[in-house]
Amino acid sequence: METKETKQASSNFIRTIVIEDLNEGRTDRIVTRFPPEPNGYLHIGHAKSICLNFELADEFNGRTNLRFDDTNPMKEDTEYVEAIKEDVTWLGFQWDGMHFASDYFDELYDRAVLLIRKGKAYVCDLTQDQIRATRGTLTEPGQESPYRNRSAEENLDLFQRMRQGEFKDGEKVLRAKIDMASPNINMRDPVLYRISHTAHHRTGDKWCIYPMYDFAHPLSDAIEGVTHSLCTLEFEDHRPLYDWAIRECEMEAQPRQYEFARLNMTNTVMSKRKLKQLVDEKIVDGWDDPRMPTISGLRRRGFTPEAIRNFAREIGVSKSNSIVDDRMLEHFIREDLKMKAPRTMAVLNPLKLVIMNYPEGQTEWLDAENNSENPEMGSRQIPFSRVIYIEQDDFMEKPPSKYFRLFPGNEVRLKNAYFIKCVDVVKDDSGQVLEIRCTYDPETKSGTGFTGRKVKGTIHWVEATHAIAAEFRLFEPLLLTDESEDEKSFLENINPRSIEILQGFVEPNMKDAQAQDKFQFFRHGYFNVDPKLTAKDKIVFNQIVSLKSSYDVVQKA
Ligand code: ATP
Ligand code: MG
Image (tube, rainbow, N blue to C red; front, side, top):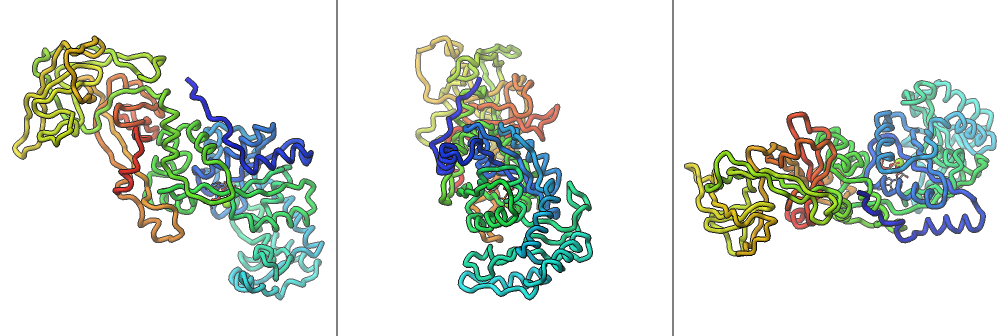
């Protein structure tokens, strides 16, 4: 069944701008784009940007392009291109055009030549360090490069020779000629092209000069007819350069850049460089490790596109940076799965329990509802017999007061079955509990309306002979702190308890469970069948979320 999605969350300043632009005729059809650099997998922060761009265009009958910002061949790879396409599609969005900044390399080159002809760009021989050292500071202007006043002819000749591969990496760059005294450091003759004798994942060896982001991005937007170019706040100071490039390169289309606050989340890093470090150093099991904030990690963990989209709408779009509590995301997956996921029983830490007065060799099949909040999901038959498994912590030999589960002499309800009473405990020489012995009362069968007496506790269980062995993976946040600029503290703050692996049992009906199927295990929360680790003879479940917020657990870690 479909879970209803929240509508577009309350409006935001970008949506207001779009409405004004449409009403005042500045555009009759908006075009947005999502421009990932294929140097890593997408994360939940990207999901915010994806939802914003696609949903805005959808709402106003516009278009959204997927554009790979592939101007840095050293870090990019087709593996990432494929992963990004898969993730955007899985989130539920269909792009209109799929483009690569590298498709525009010829045009970008021609526009750079135009700048040189106009005296708006020059080839500079300073090294990267020298450029940085002469750029000035917030309070002091930069120094002009000694190469700044080369003639257009000389610049054209040198730029062409840069392209032809005559110079080594770093030997020369093409710089915009703007203003070394500008209060905005981005306008102090920024680099437009650099030399890199590196094969590109799409253009191969065709180019050995590559455009910088600040040059490629505005022009790519203009080439595609993007009307509203949405990016995160760090680019606010780059906007004058964005506008400069569009104007001086004489682009026909006039895209406008708008900045919004990036998503930051507690206990989460989102920098791709840091995520890649976690992968490369094998701190996690790949980009799709269920603890990763990547879209592929969240998918493998068991999050749904609906939950992520609802989360993105709820957090909204604003101009001020803030940190979203990671429990917000958990809230939306609980909401989404509440009515959708079948509810069954799983024992994660098994303890054997024998019902002494139940006939040996007999099995009966009991009716169990699949989702008590959604009767449409029907019911199933579960086996019951003399030997079952319960959770280790549902039994205590010497319980504290207010412990209503099983202890010697106490009676509890077995979910969907009978009342049982603990009559004996079998231990090994070291005192370890091996087996609990109980009696059951046939009068108390669930669903028969028994009202004779009440018990305070209900515990779950799985019948032993039909049970299916299963592995359960429980997670806590990978990090104990928020994203920090301090590089050392990032790896030091890895949560040593971020994963716990348990071997237990699930009901026999789970034999048909498929990768990515989602369940609510009674009292344990929501679980997803892991698509990577589940094999023919082994089923592995990832805990998506507990039934309630895990905040206390995290705080204690
Ligand atoms: P990183 O700096 O970690 O490499 P990035 O921002 O450079 O990340 P891109 O692939 O360039 O990654 O991002 C693609 C788009 O997603 C950009 O428009 C960027 O602004 C947006 N984006 C990236 N991270 C976030 C975030 N945390 N919240 C919202 N939008 C984001
Ligand atoms: Mg980027």
